[in-house]
Length: 126
Image (tube, rainbow, N blue to C red; front, side, top):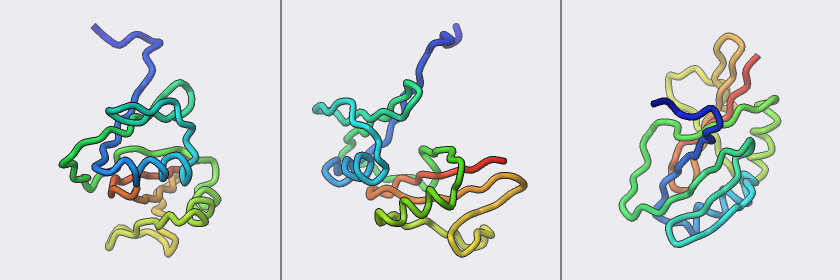
């Protein structure tokens, strides 16, 4: 069996402290809140996709990207996020510029963490 064509994705971000991470996703990233319940918070990612911020007592974030956004102008998006206190990661030996942008062919990528340490990204293609 394969997924139905109308299946809508749901992403999960794990957190040990919803009181800290919830405002980051709502206020800093500007994601519209859909619902809040005992088990987590649901945000609208657009296009019908949702993000569920889920409480996990012993969660330890991994080093890999867990969620990213394609943006039309990565430097403008970075400037907006920096104005809200977001710090972009620069990884030693990765070849990013001084702003934290890694470029490869027609793609530009930048990474940042939520307050929990979950790695998020911005991408600009073309």
